[in-house]
Amino acid sequence: MYELLTALEHSAAEIRQLLTAYDDASELPGRVQEEDPDGTGRKASRGPSRPTEATALCERRAALLNQLHSGAQWLPRAVAITQGVAASMDRELARWEGESTEHDGGQP
Image 1 (spheres, helix red, strand yellow):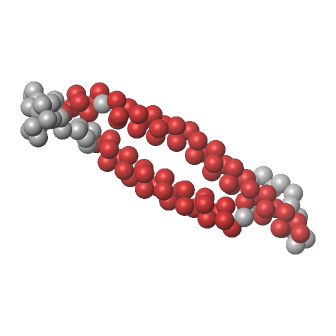
Image 2 (cartoon, rainbow, N blue to C red; image 1 turned 30 degrees about the horizontal axis):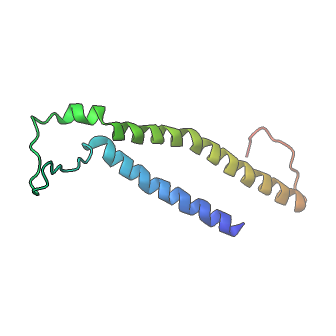
Image 3 (tube, rainbow, N blue to C red; image 1 turned 180 degrees about the vertical axis):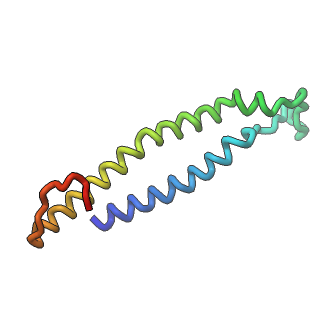
């Protein structure tokens, strides 16, 4: 069980780091690969830049936001399951120690 808890902690830390990267990505324009249309090493010229429009319509940004929303839907379930496991373990330990484990309506 210790290995599972370590994996859970690692995943939570990784998600926290990714969330920081997602915050940055939501505010910056997406990276664009430089084109070399004729193979000469020169970069292709582009028309006038429209960063706001490019940011809003970026498919990669939309994919990031979609994944962020998906995570926001799954994480509450993971939290609820983890809290349920902790509460069940705590309740059984209290019962083993001879304490009453009747439901107290959430009172301390």
